Image (cartoon, rainbow, N blue to C red; front, side, top):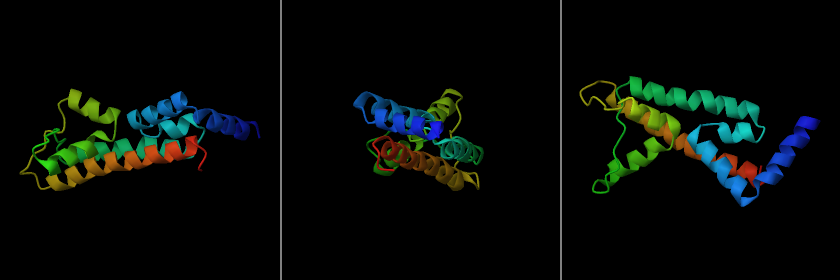
Length: 136
């Protein structure tokens, strides 16, 4: 019972603007961290494992991390989707991963995994936000 009251207290406290911003930033930077911080352990662990794994599979399948190019709208949208995963994106960039090999048979599958992982994390962020403001 004390764990439920602690989670409820965190949810009420998360409605404060500063803490709400912290939850959102944590949820973006580390997939599942927003849920873990709010006491939703099972969901948080699933997101923490599944989303970076999807991102890693996309890199292994020769997917490309798209640059932010405003001149090409579809490339720009792909870049936003890639960055949605948070820290794993920056780690991949730091390690010079995600150059993409267009001639690889798995190139499009890799791109799909990379972008889907980022977009799913954006949905996870919205879920963490809903929990923080008390909608869930």
